[in-house]
Every structure is written in structure tokens, then in C-alpha cells.
Image 1 (cartoon, helix red, strand yellow):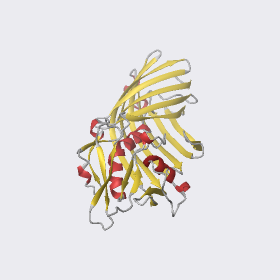
Image 2: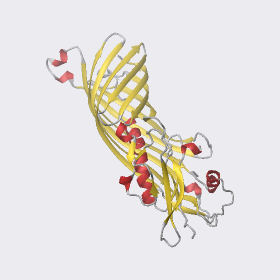
Image 3: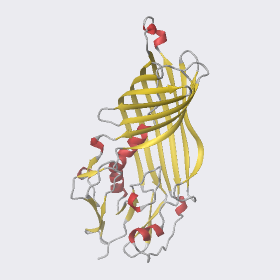
Image 4: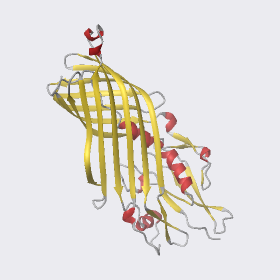
Length: 360
């Protein structure tokens, strides 16, 4: 009894690096896109949360707004780290039909590498039974989070108000390993910081700075195909005898990452010669999505190429409170800041910021 055709799903891929190495990609063959999306959601949610949190981080390094005309050009490096509870997921709670595992607790993308395997099941031609297609190890990044780097410009306005701007113009960027494929990027962010201490009689004379702030950002990254072609199946399965009776336009494949976020908070700082100490209380939220659209080939047991469409569509919301502590060192026009945010049972983070400008 022959097994029917099974679809494959690429879910272990990092949206920004887009590496094609086989040890960075896991191929799951299955008849159910519902099952595949459940596994992708459970496995990849920490990555989406980490990246969504990254864009809300690193905006602040002082409570003292710049004077009118002062400016600071910064390079913000930030990384958000998954809590222990997001490093594994409960496999059996997913109630899957076409995937099995001997282990109940499996690692997410930020979990520790284990010997855990997924067994993939396919339906026979008459639909009477499920048969084993193969066993696949679950690779992980073996890292707590995913870093990101963003440019930022701060400009002093009036009445103790500071404008914060992040962004990249829309552009096409060659991918790391294939100049023929292009990644389209769009990113912007804007924020304001305002000195509230100035409006408080008595308190405004105390020797520290106190401001409130708010930010919002939007990032979109699109990797245009082809991402996965019949030749890749031959490489992955060591099979060079496949036929493709109904080829599709693999240039129509696309992987799109999108995140929207905002933060609101209050910051207190104390400026000394050369060094400024600062601390923040902040609420942040983000919505992050990852979709893979277009036609994707897979091989059936008759060595024929068939296709599935729009295989992955994930979306994850994340909101949290955080407490930040940091220090900024300033020498003439150069500043270096380091800070860390603790978010109980959520995504804590670390930031390193280098700045150049005319500021206090």
C-alpha cells in the first residue's frame, strides 16, 4: 500500500539571516498545514517575542532632555532573552495528528539541544492508517535571545522635550549567500521624552532629572524567492531522480517578517562628571508576525514533485513591564551607554549604545 503525497514545511529559519545551510533548516513532511502551523507557533514564538521586544529597547540613556538644537547620533545594539518557561513547549498539548514524539517536553528555538525527535506520519492511499515517513531532530540556536542593531537620532526641541527617531529608508538588500535574491527592508520608529520635573514646584529644585517618554516603531522585512526549489529537495533527501510534471513559479515564494510595537515609561537620572546613572519603569507591547507565502514543492513516494501554498502564517503578541538600570559615560562628543532591563517572567534585555553629538 503506497503512502500518499506529503507536504514539507520549513520552520526553523531565522528571518534576518536567511541562511540556507541544512543544519539551520528542519524539513517536516506532513499532510496537515494545521499541524505544521501549530508546531511552528510553539517552536518559533520565543523568536517572535524576542524580536518584537528588541525594537522597544534601548531608546533611553538619560532623563535630562537635550536643549534646543542639541543632537545625538546613536547606534543601538540590543538583545532580548527568553524566560525559562519559553525555552520548551508541551508537545502533547498541541493535539497533533501527523506528528509524534516520545518526549512530552520539546525545546523551542531558544531551548537547549537535546536528542528529542519528531516522528512524521503520513496517510495511506485509502486513508485507513498512518505510516511513519521519517524521524527528524530538532535543532535550536542554543542562545537565550536574538540581537538586533538600530540607528537612532535624538534632537533637542523646546520646553524640556526631546525627539527620538529611528529608521532605515526602504531598500533592497542582497542576502548573505545569494546576490540574486533580494531582501526588502523598511523600518521606522519615533519617540518623545519630556521633562516633567520642571512642572513640580519644590521637586524641580532637587538634584536629579525626571522625565516621561513614549515610543512606537514598525519594521518590515521581506525575503523574495525562490526560497525552496526542487533542486533543494534533491540535496536534502539525496534524491536526483525526481520529476516535476507541474512546475510552479518559485520566484513567487516570499517570507515576510513584520513587527509593530510601542513603549511608555518614566526615567530618573543623576549626572556626575563624565558619568550619568539612570533608571526606568516601562510598559511595552508588540505584535510580530511571520508568513511564508507562494508555492512550495515536496516529493511524494512516486518521486514526483507536488506543491503546497502559503505554508506558514504566525502572529504573536507580547506585553510586559520592565525595570531598567544603566550608566552612560561621556567624553567630549562621544558617549557609551550600557543598560539592562529586568522583566519578571518575560523578556529581559541588555543594551549597548554608542553615540556621537553635541549634547550635555
